Length: 190
Image (cartoon, helix red, strand yellow):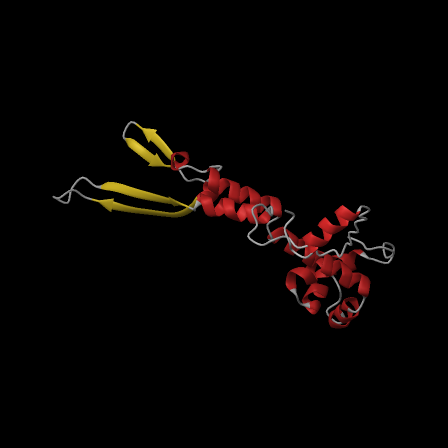
């Protein structure tokens, strides 16, 4: 965990301090836990936090934590794909005594489930309990639409050229000039 040009200047205590400061958010506590003297921990913490190369390491740790907590485009696309490929039968197992709902994390389409409700119902005499489980899936059409937006497919908004390119046409014949002028003025080509 070193930065450009500071490989030789970074001590083990400084590296440990950076990691602990990132975890604890308190300079003095991080310095103490990194092994600095209780007498100098507050001063060392202040000094360490004023060193740009140590702050760069702490910022890198923060960025890595943020990067890991935010889903990538691929993960979002995979989740949307789970939603629109899922079928209720993916979550059902038929047995001799009826069907069972299987919604464990190992199910490849578990992300498609929006809601699960379960209740026990009895016959008119209050006997013979039956567990009724309802599974509601996310709307696959909305998932497809969302993925199309991500992939910029079927956009509702027209695509506008924003890179300021200039296109020049060189029209050489008189007839072509007349047609070009008519098109520019919005007239038909009849």
